[in-house]
Image (cartoon, rainbow, N blue to C red; front, side, top):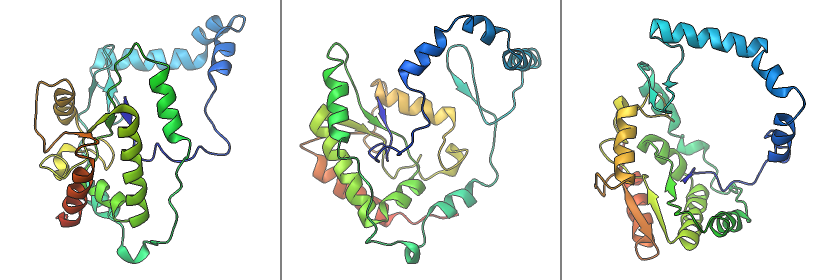
Length: 230
């Protein structure tokens, strides 16, 4: 189960997400499956998919096949600029600004755990470039929220697989096609660490109550020492 940084943020006052009840009502509506199948949007998308399949090309940054495997040939020439702009100016950081934190976040994690006792839940953090990690943890209050996030994840699940670190992959822009997304070859490395076929503590740290304090201290030192070169 991937847990994104900022997943602990309070929910928006007005959510744009469709509730499960609304989704089921729509799907079970009379003639819905026929209207959706024969709609112009479905036809347009089918034509696009046919062209992509016959021409062996696709538009956009990435594409998925029927096995949900992603691929991309996109190279972003502005990646260094994106990383450079991601690092905040110390003069614009307001240390007194409160970082919103959902006080029900831990209870939500407990609910997920308690309602899925027949599943083995392995929580892991979203892989993040060192540039973006530095952006988040430069703010003292953001760091405080980050520490609370880890404390609550570990308290509920016992361990968290963390990809947050400064290493050869997170500092190298050639592995990232923007400041949020990495190329499939790096994704393969992350997956291999999740399934245990690769083991490198510089890439993946299994955080528990025993090593939590050391992990956070080491991470703060890594981020502080990291000086991006563009």
